[in-house]
Length: 416
Ligand code: HEM
Image (cartoon, rainbow, N blue to C red; front, side):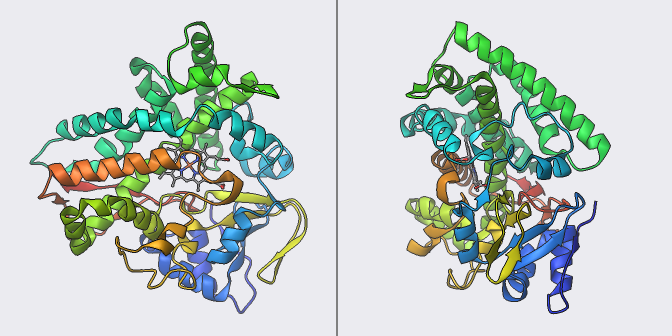
């Protein structure tokens, strides 16, 4: 499972290998490794276990242009050979969505889904998110350690996304179980098999749910998606299924890990937390700064080179995989002054962070993610003025994965 680095002698090999292998030291502090890479190997060739030639981009300007570069494709079906080498011969029945394609198909899908996933719909969720945050926190033990990641940070977004899609309450635990299994799928055969089975279950479940929504539409997003149409017609059955899956998947872990990272960093920066408590009006800029400082999407933003190209002097051959590290770009000192300082009053520039991506694939759920995170933090810090880490002396437990797609904690033990 280990990644190695295809590094010429001048590269900061130790740093790049630490990043490639996701070793515990790197997980604890990826930012100093990224700092070395930005300096010495800003477009770093790597050899992941799937063997596909891969390049990691770490500087802000390179990352921003790569995210919007039409020569770097998201068309998974066009890059099927590469895809198979990474993921095996898996079914692609739920992969037919906007994040896996280029224009003109992307334009059509994004327009159709965007016509139903409107700012008004997001805003209508606000009271429900607020109420859910209170209910979840009230259910936590108040005087004993509680893992806030599981009981709150994960529980809230899954509840919101299930509400949004119109997934009945009694099905939610099951759906969440399958989606967690799929998300944890690694490269080894056993984990792949488990992932394939869970994906099959989700596929069957969504197919059934969509046909029920067609017969008895509600005011949820999935019902709206079955009716959405434009000049080019409606979403096909496969596109509908894939979109439901994309929203469930994209709207869940990302938000959960961001809430976890945000709470952890505010607790570790008491002066910043005090400032936020004194001036709640800073919440919006605090969430933007937390997305910049330690956002939850680290390198999940990959692209395929549709042609030979050169980025920052490094030649990338057609067919190679390009990973763009948002975590690294957001700490680039060329873009952000004192990037390793958490400063919730940072204005202007902080909002140029790449935490939600950039270009045509810019996160469709950003308004919802912002609202959820702002409500989660405000409710938590408001209700629990003495909130503290349960093990203030212990180092934070970060997820340890071979290569970082997401940046998040494995657990967040606190006393409320
Ligand atoms: C795309 C981050 C929450 C739906 C993206 C991308 C990023 C991102 C970086 C671009 C990926 C790329 O260019 O390869 C995040 C973060 C979130 C979050 C950090 C939470 C803090 C959500 C939520 C939803 C959502 C709540 C929906 C319910 C989507 C969709 C896309 C997307 C549909 C694909 C857009 C397209 O291809 O045009 N997200 N996301 N995300 N996100 Fe999010």
